[in-house]
Length: 153
Ligand SMILES: [Cu+2]
Image (cartoon, rainbow, N blue to C red; front, top):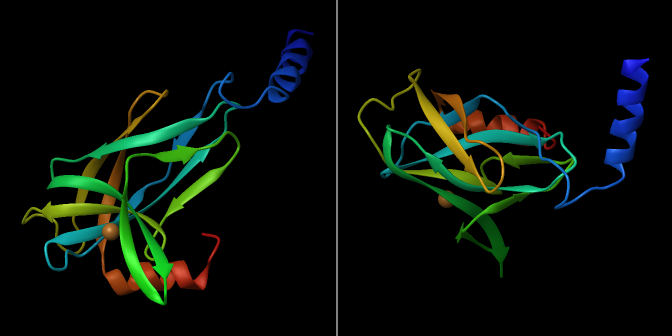
């Protein structure tokens, strides 16, 4: 009885999406490319299972000087990288960071960021509590290949 009324409550809540609801975020394990020319791209997926919107506002790590939120945009056949203030995480949606699109860019990774190493990333959000995940360092070509093999991954 208690369970079924809880389900009814959930169904009612699901109708009220957006800023009024509660975001419920799930962050995947991350993969970072072997650093190239003083930076490294990070591949990561964030799913908002909740009924309220949220936004990724910052990413921190001890393994680099900083991490920026970037998006690759194509204009006049040229790819340029744009730095973003925040990335929206709408209720019920999955946002993927990967080479060629939205990505996290680690600036000046330290000497310990080498193939096979792992380090911690902490993601900060507009509304939810911060979440820490582990990143593994992989070859950039492997990361790019995975993204191309499975455009939805
Ligand atoms: Cu970038």
